[in-house]
Amino acid sequence: MDFSSIESRARAAKAAGQEVVLVLGLGFVGTAVAGNLARAEGASKRLFFVIGLDRDDEPGRAKVARLDQGSSPTYANDPSLERVIHEACTVSKNLVGSNDPRSIGLADIVVSCINLDVQRDAGQVDKLVVPTEGYAAAMRMVGAHMRPGTLVTVESTLPIGLCDRVLYPALCEGQKKQGVDVAKNPPKLAYCYERVMPGPDYLDSVNNFWRAYAGMDAASADAARDFLAKYVNIEKFPLWRHKSTRAAEMAKLLENSYRATNIAFIEEWAKLAEGAGVDLFDIVKSVRMRKGTHDNMMLPGLGVGGYCLTKDALLAKYGAEKLLGLDVAMPFSRSAILTNEAMPMRAVRWVEEHFKGALAGRKVALVGVTYRPGVNDTRSTPSEIVGRALMAKGCKVAAYDPLVTHWDECPEIAVSQDAAPVVRGADAVIICLPDPLYRPFLAELLKKELSSGAIVIDPWNMVVDACAADFVRRDITLKVYGRGDYERAGAR
Image 1 (cartoon, rainbow, N blue to C red):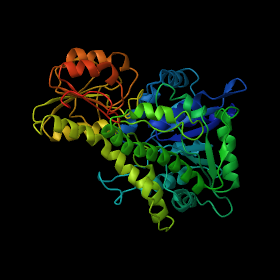
Image 2 (cartoon, rainbow, N blue to C red; image 1 turned 180 degrees about the horizontal axis):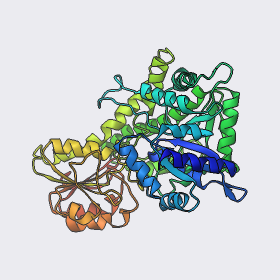
Image 3 (cartoon, helix red, strand yellow; image 1 turned 90 degrees about the vertical axis):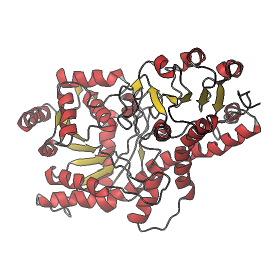
Image 4 (cartoon, rainbow, N blue to C red; image 1 turned 180 degrees about the vertical axis):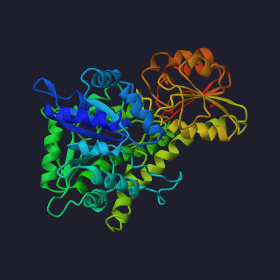
């Protein structure tokens, strides 16, 4: 939609009592935020007129075109998202897309959902590239176009200190270009980190979850609180006000680093269980009976994937050193990243050992390629590590995933939504994800389609109890992360 049309509709919305909210970035988070804001109601009317702004490049224009046609800019396994966006774009008409930064000047509130990616080589955590200048440039752009008094909230995961050391000064720079005296009229900047949960409840997770926030000053924090309270279910999920933006930045990083470390911790116990001939899955379930202290202990698995757990611990040390000038080691959190990154390679080594290094031409089937069940997000997945490693050794790798048609990060591997032809006749099958969509039929499929001499790697304890006896009888090897209590073909 052209700017003049957006401007006209925004002015009409304001006249009707709606606030104008601009969502910066129409990715996984921004799309859900925009849809949720567009459906927010109060006093029998929509509260917000929402503008989704993305870059004026080919991918950004494609997202805006989809939004203006009433479709979600990004796919999610949540039918309500597509329905809400279609209704907001075509019926209530309070959601539009734009590639024009002048749209920022129409907004009462700007919500930034752009990515801050961490780039590093695998196997090390010391040399990072964190493009903070790109985020600063976005804030300068916002400041150069927004009206004084506009609230700017940031939902992206950030290094500690980025709000006060980088983003706020950049916002001020942009305002100064408009001639605003920021000493007398300081911009309102708040950090309200996202807690979106991809999957079938993707959209509802924006407003039906505990949210936290902090402001650069009391006025910013108060404005953020009032804004969040309009669309978050605060009766069931009360807001948490942090004492500073740094505290909020650390809270987000700590939340994800804790989970990543919990996962890494269980890996050494998984190896011990395999050697000791015991079932760690059963053991962990017994430990989880201690509610309140041990009930969130993780189970073994192939590894860690996704956009958050694979990097967030590194942003803590980066921010502390680069932005705050602190000398910190963070050994546990950083080691967890490396441990989790190495976990998928155990499956690769098992395949290599099984075939005594003769992998050229072997057919390998990957079952599941996303980073968690119920989503189609394939960023930073353990299955990619496994797939690339096996291809490098000469294997012919194919994949099955019911929610993925094309693997953007690994286009060399064909992905089918039909499991049978992928598994049929495979020399090795690696179950990369414990997705309930295929849990009911996977064991029987493997027993039907595999032949003697094959190997199945089950990091998630999905098929071992149903398949172990059959596999031993037919000379199919079964390897399970965290279990050494069953008979494995070739182990006697």
